[in-house]
Image 1 (tube, helix red, strand yellow):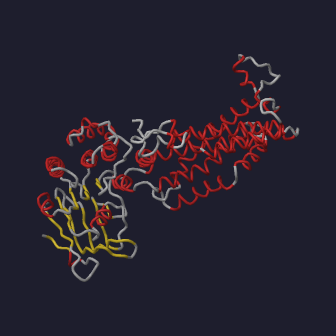
Image 2 (cartoon, each protein chain N blue to C red):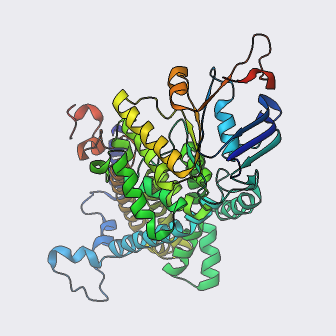
Image 3 (tube, rainbow over the protein chains, first blue to last red):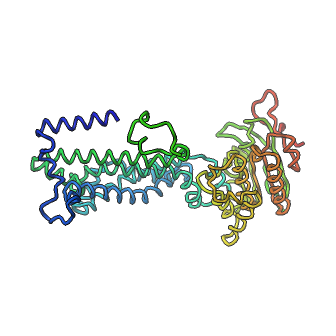
Length: 272
Length: 223
C-alpha cells in the first residue's frame, strides 16, 4: 500500500513538473468528449464519449473475449498435456503446441494477426487468445498434475474413460485453481491489451500510439496514468475475487477493506 | 465360475525395487480376503497392482477374466483407496454417481446411487460437498460410491479406519451383504488383525521376516 501511495505521489510530482498546475493540465483533454461524433450522453456521463474511456473499454472488452476464448481452447490443451492423465505420446505434442503459443509475446502475435486480418480489435482478440492458450494451458496442466492422485486412481480403477475422468473428476477437483487462474489471466490480458493497440490491434494503445506520433506527450502521460489506475483497480478486484476460490475460502472469506488496506488497518474479526 | 483374482509369480514394487513377491494366490467369487502386515511392506502396492494402477515388475495378474495390462469389463473393479479418492468439491451425490455411472447402464444408475446413499445413511447429506463432511462420513461416501458401482471385485485399503463402532458395523454389513448376495469378491487391507479376522473368510499375513528387508513368497502365509 505504501508503495502504491509513493507511486501515485511520484506521478503527481511528475505531472506538476512537466505541466504546471495539475488541474489545468492539457493532458486531461483525453477524458473530455470527442468533438465528433457528437456526444449524446448526459452532462455527468460525457466522459464516456472520451477517447480514454472508449479506448479503455475496448481494451477491457478485448481482454474479456481473449480470456473467454483462451479458456475454452486452453482447457482441452491443459488436460491433454497432463502426464497424470495421458501417455507421453499425447502430452508431448500437446505441450509443444502450448509452448509454441507462449513462445512469442502477445505483441508479436498482434503484429502477425494485424498482417493476417487487418487493423482493429479482431486482431487483438486473436493475438491475446493465442497467448492465453499458451500461458493458461501451462498453468492448467501444472495444476492438474499437482492434484491429489487418489480420485484419479479410484476413477481409473472403475474403468471410466479419459473424457469422463476429465469431466467428473479433474475439472471439479481443480476448479478453484482453474477459476483463479482465469481471473489472473484476465487481469494479465488487460495489462498486455494496452500495449497491443500500439501495433494497431485495438484498444487504448491505439490512442497512445496516435498521440506519440503527434508528439503530444502530455496526453500520452494522461493515458498512462488512466491505464495505471484501471489496472490497479482490476488487480485489487481480481485479488478479492480470487480469494473466494481457495480451499480455505469458506473459513476466511475476505472483506473489501482487507484487499484495499494493509492488514493492520482491518479489524481482526472474520466476516463470517 | 472363474476366480475373481489369480496371481502367479508376481513381483510388486517400483521400477526394479521389489517390495513383495507372491508365488501363487487367488480369490474366489463371494470370498472376502483380508491382508494385514506392517506398514511399508507393499500391501497398498499389491492392491494397486490388482486394480491395474501399478505395473507389476514380473508375473501375471488375472482380474475378472482379464490379464493385466488388459482391462476387465468397465465397472468390474471398485477401488476404495486409503485416502478415499473422493472429489472434494463435488457433492455426495456427484461422487456416488461417479461409481454408479461406471458400473450401471444410464437407465438404472440414479436408482443404484440413491439406494447406496440410503444404505450408508447419507440421505440427508446428499447435496453436501465432500469437504464439509467428517472423516467418517467421507468413508461412508466412498463405500456408497463402490456399492452403487456394483463391481465384481472390491479392493478396499483400510476403509474402516476413522469409523465409530456402530457405523463400522453398518458399513461392514452392507458391504458383506453385497459381496455375498452378488457373488462378488473383496480384498481388504486392514491393520487391525482381530477386525480383519472377524470380517474376512481368509486372512493373509504378510511378514517381512528379520533380516531380509524384502518380502519373499515364503513369508506370505495363510492363516
